[in-house]
Amino acid sequence: MNDLTPILNRVTCGDCLEVMATMPESSVDTIITDPPYGLSFMGKEWDHGVPGAEFWQAALRVAKPGTILMAFGGTRTYHRLTCAIEDAGWEIRDCMLWLYGSGFPKSLDISKAIDKVAGAEREVVGCRSYSSSDIRGNSSNGRGISGPENKDKDRLNIPITAPSTPEAQLWHGWGTALKPAWEPIVIAMKPLDGTFANNALTHGVAGMWIDGSRVGTTKRTPGYAKPQTRMNTVSEWNKSSLGLRREVDTNSGRFPANLILDEEAGALLDEQSGVSKGQKSGGKKERNSHLSEEYWEQGGGGFKQGRSTVFHSDSGGASRFFYCSKASRKERNRGLPDGEVNRHPTVKPLKLMEYLCTLTKTPTGGIVLDPFCGSGSTLVAAQITGRQYIGIDIDNQSCDTARHRLQGDGLFAKIA
Image 1 (cartoon, rainbow, N blue to C red):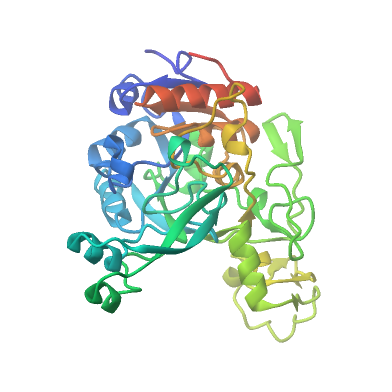
Image 2 (cartoon, rainbow, N blue to C red):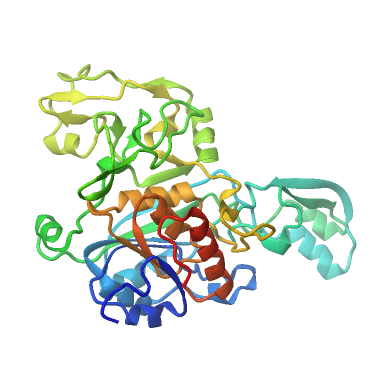
């Protein structure tokens, strides 16, 4: 293969190692992926191991110098993922945390296990109900229930039973796991060709699009300004000579952080923090004059604009300091034929993936590779943000689902 045309803006079903071996060297600008976590989730064969260094070496070969890699990991196994990526030759740059308020606990009830061993029948004394947002696929050590396992699309009802034996009564309330509430996103970079400036001029890749991803206090930037008021991630795009670019008011957006919240986590944080007001521009100029230029350039408190200090005079809860992704309950099935549902158990919210695609965007857009694309959330997000993509997955059903979702959104989709 001499170029990427046969697989560009398509979903290719196959082993990602074999597919990446056919790709030209230094041909993609960004890699965003949600690889297996090695947790044997629901007995799935694809989740029996964390991808080793050979996968990330193959990804390194097809990445341009300076390419940013973002890979989701499980809280129990992300250390293996990080080590494999680093051993393959990538530079570990940071670890982003995605916090969510929903998530289905997968804890073994020790009291129930003791009664089961004893052959004792337990009395049902109630029912615990979980909403669709709890089981939508957000947890890190199992990440939800979907498909035929969830007969009720909106609720999952779990019976509450009373201990039968004295031993079970003694261990009533003991379990084996905590409720999942966050996932790490490993951020790595292919080593630069010289400096960042040289890499940008030579390869068209360098760093992250900070101003395009600022956490906003106006409708022109991501995030939201007041509690319960969200802004669109990529709502205002316009065409330019360099491709799809968005108007950004850098005076109003906070520096993007390595912490991302979902809507529910943001609301919970706001409930705890209460409402506070930001400082008005210039109000602390003299008091903060001792702070270094680097402090302001990197977004500390406010940022340096010429010779004056710019602050954000907004108000709201503490979540306004971070990007909050808003997930739609309908998005996982968007674009699928009537009557079909997305049965992939680890679907990520589109607004989250849109934000990552925006943060890693190059001035000309750039190609996004997802070697473990699943049902295609990364690819759909790339489409929405005006980027080209390459999707690879070994599961036929997941590939078909991804193709339908891409065709439904219809910007660059081509059914392979």
